[in-house]
Amino acid sequence: MLSPREKFGVHALLAFFSTRVLRGGPKILLHLAACLVVFILIIRFTTPTAHTASPLADVYAHGGSSKDGSASGLRIVVFGADDIAMPAPVRGLEKETSRAWTEVLCQELKCSQYQSFVPAADNNTHAMVSNSIYDAAVEHLMNETWGNHSPGGNYGFQADEFPVVSLPDLSRQVSAFLGTRTPSTRPNETLWVFTFGTWDVWALASMPLNISGTVIELLADSVFDEAERLYHSALDEGSVAWSGVAGQQRGGGATAKRNAYPDNTNPETDMKGRRADQFSIMIPTLFDPSLTPGWDLARPALSAVHSKAEQLRNAAALTGKWNSRLAENLHDWVRGPGGGRTTPQGQDEPSASASASLLDRIASRNKYPLRDAFLHDQAGLVLDAVVERQLRDGGMADTTNPNAQPEAEVYRHVRTPCVLGGAPCEAPHQHLFLTPFKVGSRAVADLGRRAAAMVRRGETLRANWAASGGASSWAS
Image (cartoon, rainbow, N blue to C red; front, side, top):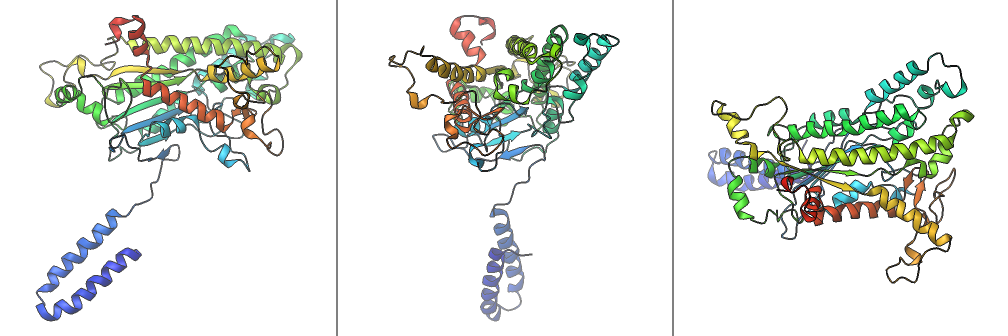
């Protein structure tokens, strides 16, 4: 069916035909038919059409531009769980709960594509890093404590109170992304964000630390298994993980592009020190879930021997293990076995006998994208807000310091959420937490802006190594 614009074009051509055909005779019919087809096609393909996203992915085409007016070409892809700075829909506060910190990151960097594979919480269940690892941990716990009838040895509640969830874990989220249709316009570069850990610690905190401590490290390791999977996929031009400029730099046009930008910057991204042949990931540090109001409000009441106090200590220990293991793995992953440029597992270096197509795609070892990472201290930023309020309430804050935050900028409430079992509060911006497990829009915006500032300043692991003189052999 023709649109109003197309109908207008048809009417105009018919009016033209009614005068010209009488003068030019039947021969003009062929010309008019061709004009009609071309006219309709032009209107059809220049009219914006609605974009249909994957059920798991929310795709936002912000149409961001750099200072020179050209498209930024930055794609941000997010994998994770609904952590403390993800949306938490609240009736009457839609504007306060509509954005995630990663969306703010995208808007601040004027990204051209945003894809989030973070599943929404379903009936109070939340995504975890690996469903299979957690399932195996629960089974191991049941086997270890089978026949132990002492109160402290009874962990029969684990599978009931903290069940294995059916929501997509990290591996399934990555598979969903790799299964999406390759976009017609490739991004110049991609920033991969992994935000997990909250609900893994929540579930594991009720287990003995000698088991849960090992499990949390396995979960942190599995994040980098999936990062490596994406890295290898990004080498294939046919994969949705491939980025345009990075691919060009790995191909024949690399020398020309690097000579054009001798300082290794990409003017299209407006990000200091960023190189188009980098494969960059961002991981936020984990805020201890036992410090959220939701820990006291929503934690299941177990037997006295498995008290909330014991689980709180476990949560603190597991959060520390997660953050330290994540940082260690991040450094090891960025360094990589080849100084950050590695050949995919199971593949040999290209040789003279390799096929022409392989040589075109992988010219030499040095054509692999350089690994780099941003470690976003999300937990530290939220904890600072909590401590600042506590110091002021206790009269221990030095408010005379010229650099001290004005009282109006300090959160008034850091332990009581704005929404607590009823109508929302009157001043959401005075509450650090909007709901028992989610910070408010003010904190979300701040976390997103801080993350964007890191990217603009180029505060990557490699940049930090270069500035400190450490890991010099990997900072090239």
